[in-house]
Image (cartoon, rainbow, N blue to C red; front, top):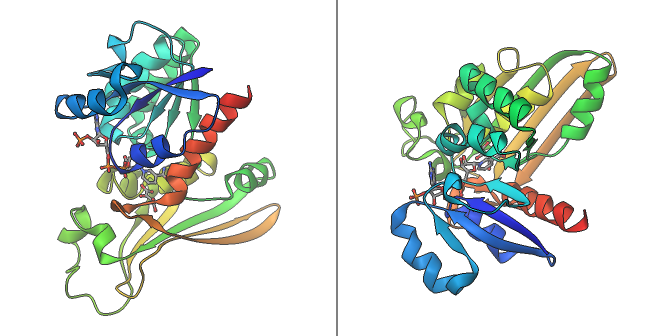
Length: 260
Ligand SMILES: NC(=O)C1=CN([C@@H]2O[C@H](COP(=O)(O)OP(=O)(O)OC[C@H]3O[C@@H](n4cnc5c(N)ncnc54)[C@H](OP(=O)(O)O)[C@@H]3O)[C@@H](O)[C@H]2O)C=CC1
Ligand SMILES: O=C([O-])CC(=O)C(=O)O
């Protein structure tokens, strides 16, 4: 039986817990103190709530980050320095070049393994293959409902309550998008890391009052030709910012672990 540590106890973490595949057990949850009593009541002694991964006395087979860019900054380097396997969903954290270097240095020194989860988008395999032939242009667009952008920096750029038609409210690099929209633009960072990098990946963010989906559009041009991919994902009921597919990509990482 493989034993995992989950970082975060929000919408995605709940979706992952509900779908944990056979052969994988949840051993630890890193969560803020107010969640600890709930975790103890729900799982009894089977799952230990922790304030940080450093408080864990055993070695998890996988540490699954389903929390925030801030959590990646707080714990990522330490997890990798211990030689553990870290799977990250809040990939936008790596838009901070200093943090990316710290994480890479810790990984090299400690021998840990870093996996970037494919998250809410598909096609990362095709992007990686296309990169081998040279990439010329990568554009990513995210289109979500007003509810999905609420509480984000979008509120300073557009009147989410008054918008009548679909509208682009942000255009910029993946680095800017991931840092300005930490709960909404991790996919931009994932595309950037798999393709032409944070500064050359063009990003458009769009609000659409007519949709209830999170639609991700990726356009890639290069020596191989071009591809255009559109994925229309259902958001999680408990967090409209987050697509169900992102949680399923974390479940898939657990299944791969079970099969090792
Ligand atoms: N790569 C991708 O394709 C996608 C990435 N994401 C990212 O996945 C992450 C999780 O999403 P989701 O579950 O929907 O978000 P939620 O806001 O629903 O839940 C986040 C959880 O993580 C906890 N948390 C955040 N920071 C820390 C920390 N430093 N230490 C301990 N706990 C922490 C929160 O704690 P508390 O309850 O105390 O606030 C909360 O329990 C987000 O960063 C989101 O942006 C989402 C969708 C797609
Ligand atoms: O889940 C999504 O649709 C995308 C998302 O939030 C992100 O990229 O951070």
